[in-house]
Length: 248
Ligand SMILES: [Zn+2]
Ligand SMILES: [Zn+2]
Image: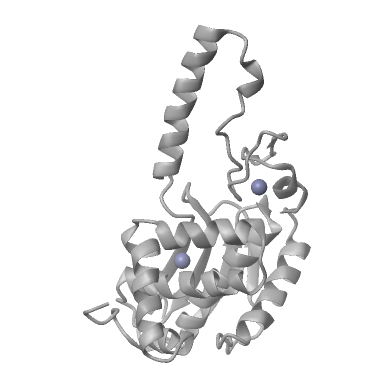
């Protein structure tokens, strides 16, 4: 019955939008504007400090304003995923790759959509219709268009892990640090399998973020996994527990 259904959604926030790095970039921009105003001849330095929205690379060699409104490096623009066919193929690839990490989805075809996620800082979202007893009636993943390929793949690993948790009937009232820490730890592990500029940048961000959920939650779960035999232990917790045990 319809009233028994509950929509469960998990956005993949790309960590705090107002990061210390960005505010220091802002400060250095103000400083740079001051220097330019006072010295006049340093216009060649106007890009100093500006970084690619997605991979963090310097934009001194050139930048692109994407149709989606992001300011990114050439590489991130060239590999941007904007069509459903590419998105579906990449999700299928990531799905088989994370199966080797222990995330095997007991489900057929997973519906992929492209469009706004309804939240400014959310680049993707996994949504599930779940019955009161936790079983899944329907499941889909939405990606915003324009994510560079490596970011799309890392994000897919994250969202597929949410899907995996739902399909394994994870607790409905799970603490956010566990509900998001688990998928972010899989994303972190997945991005570590093959080194890319984006992957290294994102992994470093996850390991240094002060965000209670996406940063600290992931690191607490990582510490738990280390003490309990690896990623599999973290996945068991994600599937069955309401929270990360005290002491982590
Ligand atoms: Zn998430
Ligand atoms: Zn980039």
